[in-house]
Amino acid sequence: MLIFKQQTLADSRKLAHRLAGFLSAGDLILLYGDLGAGKTTFTRDLVQELGADKNIIVNSPTFTVMQQYTGHGLAFPVYHFDAYRLEGIGAADQGFEDYIGTDGLTLVEWPEYMSDILPDHYLKITFTYAGDSRNIDFSASGSHYERILKAL
Ligand SMILES: Nc1ncnc2c1ncn2[C@@H]1O[C@H](COP(=O)(O)OP(=O)(O)O)[C@@H](O)[C@H]1O
Ligand SMILES: [Mg+2]
Image (cartoon, protein in one colour):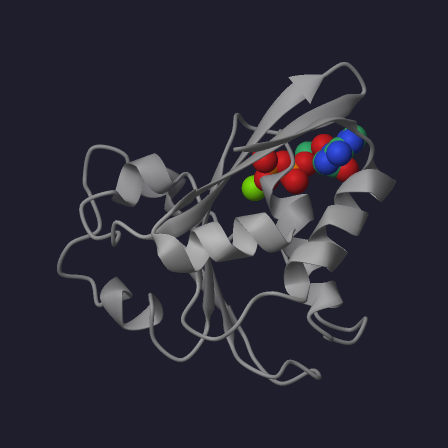
């Protein structure tokens, strides 16, 4: 577990920058944290740090559950889930598996609501409030993600 305390917006952008250098297609990142904790902000920063141009729009896909970002300078697609709406329903039989561990990087907000289809290897990032800033914790499941964590 790697713990970064009291990260400002600028600090979390720097974390996204560092992480971006170690990511590749097929990777899965689970983003835990309450509403407003910084999950979408980090996703937006990460997409920028992966090389996307400024015209790309990254928001929580609250209603569509999944938003896909391609082109715009990205070397591989980014699949961005917000599973909040799946609470009590789950994610099975909706074709979402095609966007996890395949040709792109997958980021999941509210992963607890689609745990029925998530693989057991992932990088987990947890955001918690720390006054005006945030504590950001990284942990890994599986050797691939443990290597990323060590490199960070
Ligand atoms: N590290 C941070 N420090 C201070 N404010 C932050 C930080 N990360 C995000 N925020 C702010 O918190 C608000 C909610 O962020 P958002 O990423 O939409 O949260 P979530 O997706 O977890 O609901 C935004 O106004 C954002 O600018
Ligand atoms: Mg969000």
